[in-house]
Image (cartoon, rainbow, N blue to C red; front, side, top):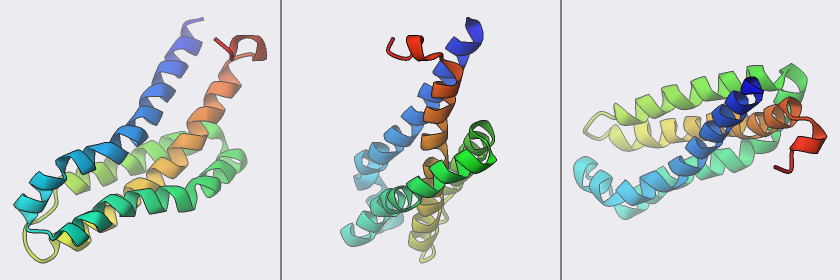
Length: 134
């Protein structure tokens, strides 16, 4: 069934984005520190803002998904995540850079917290029990 394969591919992509985002900033940290003039402590806040909000709002994301529908919450989470990612890429230079980056990394974490549990629920809803193990 093509719809099941498409749904699985889309949900894998979404979940992959949340994991990739956890590591990509750590890999780019030296360049970010150099370009924005951040200290290592400030950079640690940039990394942790995402992880903290993801962890803090993960259960809420699952509950909202149950209440409002998995697909709807998945789409909202993806939209929040993508917009926050674009805003992180548009960080201004200067004194405001740290607050900007930390703030939008936190918003990314909220988007991921909405996306991740909803994506898993969509896969469970799309595939019958006998096909989930594959």
